[in-house]
Length: 78
Image (cartoon, rainbow, N blue to C red; front, side):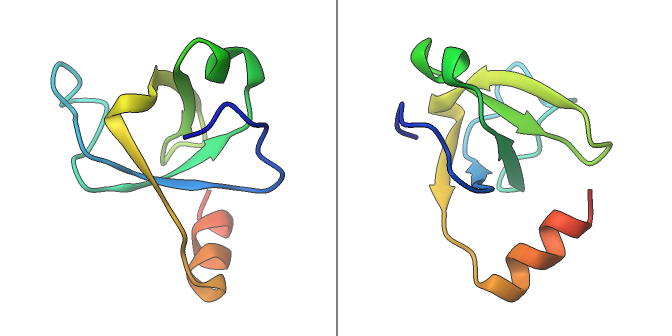
């Protein structure tokens, strides 16, 4: 992830859930929430399936682009 502010909903895939197996699912797609302060600290705000958001290290995730039909499905699932 970059430290630039997100202009629209972004998605990431979890590639490291060590020490967070109960909270993060390996290889799962997560929606992110813009948070300039978190990004400046190397963190990312992740929205889970309950709609709550939490901070994790950006190193645990890889940003992805999803097709528009998938994007709409993921956004409306939360």
